[in-house]
Length: 192
Ligand code: URA
Image (cartoon, rainbow, N blue to C red; front, side, top):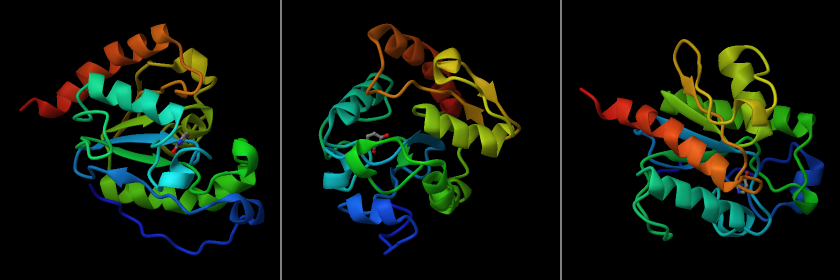
């Protein structure tokens, strides 16, 4: 399991410096070409564990999906991942609120650095904030509401994008729709 960036003593966002327990960068399989991007470390999960989507309800739901599509070997902390998992913002906002546009802007270099190093072929923006970031970088436009593009393949020149409704708010039917849509995109990688 690889983390590309090390903890830094970033102090760009005063509210986040005051609220975070730690800075959480992405981790996982950097050679897989598949990147999941969440919003920000959860107060009861990544902010405590230091691992994106680990330790809270959203994390458990995402991990269940990863196991179902073969991107995680199991649901334990020691599972092998066949994808990279990161967040738009690296510090947990006060009260688990949505990061502000200024906080997203201030944190952008970290995410873009990870994406530049990994050069993913498949990106799964998890939730609205990640969808906006990915849309801006790869599609050069706002792809619209997450609910209207959930599990819909969006292609840019170099990357396939498959938005996922945030696991904190996802229904069983939406999980199933995502699994059906993502499976052939994962398998593409394994074809000669
Ligand atoms: N945990 C994360 O790391 N990111 C989220 O978006 C939610 C929970």
